[in-house]
Image (cartoon, rainbow over all chains, first blue to last red; front, top):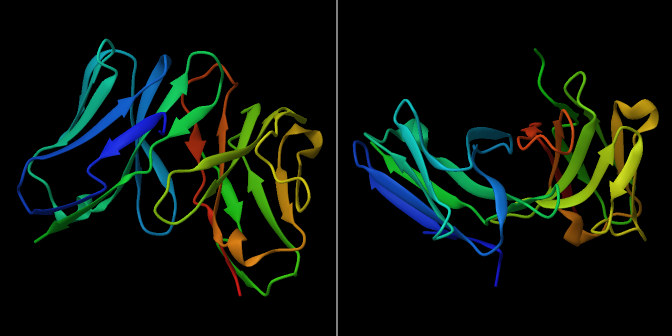
Length: 109
Length: 114
């Protein structure tokens, strides 16, 4: 079993829909990251969380430390949001990021 | 401020050939990471440098992969000889130090081995 599990693996939505991507982890962490990867490979950091909730534009990330679960929400989704969204955790016992397998999001116009 | 720079962006080679990837981290970042990302999967750490020292290379296949970070700035990752299964995206990332939780990623090099 992977230390970081994401769901769903693939998600297709219509423009304007509210989107939720989930991440569960099984280890103690010092921080959780949500990353965005567009075709071509480059990864952009969206959020870094250690507790609570963060909001940036149409993106909202939440984390529940007790339940070892985080969600990434996209409000009023747009085709330009189409990308792979990756959850990654910094394990407290080391300085290595452990990544989920990613969620492929496709938003259709 | 310039981000992490990688080159080349794309590389196509035949199996058994050597290949090298180059990474220039963000200025002042002491920690540098090389990751391997297979299609449909998350990145996996190959090696982590603190300045010029490789402090975590446990996942680096040392029979064919090598890396160096001379002078603690730029880094090169080499594969010799390449195999078909090495086709992947190779990502470089940097951070101010190992205790800084955020890493900054380069655009990656997409390697295709024929």
